[in-house]
Image (cartoon, rainbow, N blue to C red):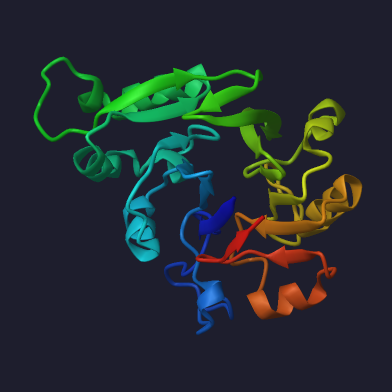
Length: 253
């Protein structure tokens, strides 16, 4: 499996208009973060988890020429607003794009992108197939996926485990039962918004405590706010098996 971080930031990410903090003024490319998303290549199948407002830019930057399915963690705009741009893959691949998400999330997409689902069949609009998912394991175009239920304050969100890789974003609580689904993963990705506590995201100390509990071989932190600090300084504070992810970071496991 090849994993590529398409975006590791938030809508509080960088650069922030009018902000003069060290992160926003940084010339380090690792401090320039698009909205959070990841690309997985699994046995020849190309999967995207979340397609936010920067989706098109991310696809062009990474030169991704094929997408077989999109998995959505939840319905917030910074994770769904790029759905319109899957039309390029409709055209190139001659398929309706499979979308996997909780029924609530699929309903929200149908409301926000109503023209996609209208009966007028207007030429050129994105074409999609809706696949509602639950907590039960499912098959995403031939790839077995185990959903992980987490909480984003009061909003249920799905993380996903695929083989030995677990990806979780927009969370601040994971039950013990759901942690058990993660245990044994070689690589775990989790959100770490900032050092200070937050109502709906893990802080850096909370994310570190979670990784100590789950004990993966390697951990990456994503969904990073400019409030966390400069990449080079924060990563220097982390344990050897924990890294701060950055846009374009890629690895194989």
